[in-house]
Image (cartoon, rainbow, N blue to C red):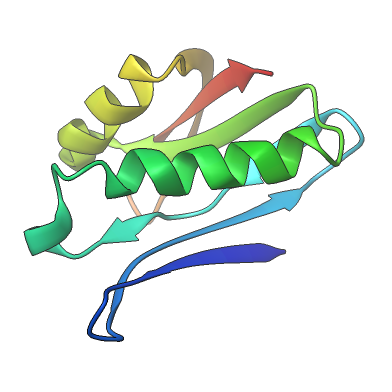
Length: 104
């Protein structure tokens, strides 16, 4: 697993995104986090780009990411960047978990 970390000029961690190769064809994103005061600055897009580049170089043919209904803002973020619902759903402690996928 690779973890990309964004650090501010003051030396504070302001964002992270982990990713890993699941199979020769699939890379997976784990939960991205960006501090609220850094949201909307382009940091999340830069972190996603770093993770996508890492997975593309592995070489993965697609990226998957799971999310839930309460994370609508995250869903919109990923959809704007080419992720679509795969139709695969599961349960996460009583909450619907939806898989999104992006071809590379």
